[in-house]
Image 1 (cartoon, rainbow, N blue to C red):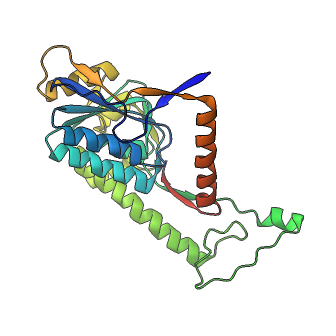
Image 2 (cartoon, rainbow, N blue to C red; image 1 turned 180 degrees about the vertical axis):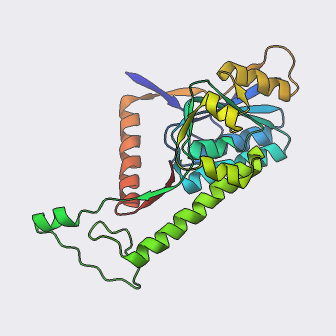
Length: 271
């Protein structure tokens, strides 16, 4: 029994020939780690024979820093003369829209769900449950706010003010990116950036999207922007075959790392 997954090893699964191809980079699912997407963008940028890239996006958003890292790498790719087109699939919201803003052109389906421009910081408070179970947390800390976001207690007013300032600053960064990349006044962006979602059609009318079209349309647009004549060829990372056991053990190791890294840690997200 075999499963198909994307090769994630450096240099694996690429077939780059000539200068008449459009590279496809997929941004699927919640944005947690930017490194695989960044690796692909760097590889295509360093190759020298790829005139344009399509970012195929189907994501509800995700981590603030991860979204920003991908955004910055797209800008570096464009500085090398590579044209970038963002193709929004079913969903390209919040952090995924942040990423799309770095592209030369944004293409969306009429019914794509996008927008959701905003920032959220959340975590569970289990103090009541812990009390019923007779569980207590013993905390020794170096400063008053070192355990902010602890599941064992509600936050204080001072902590809430501090966290709100973090959210506000991160939100302002998002708004400024949209204003700069989309050529919209800050005031207009703020009016839209209250977390609401838009269809692709609505987003185009508001100036958040350039073209209504599908993935194939995005490829053709990228080809024309890159000077490719005729029907373009495309490339993307090949899939490799792995056994179900290899896949399972890899995922168990990944999950253990995520659980160890994320436990009791509030998450700041574009979603």
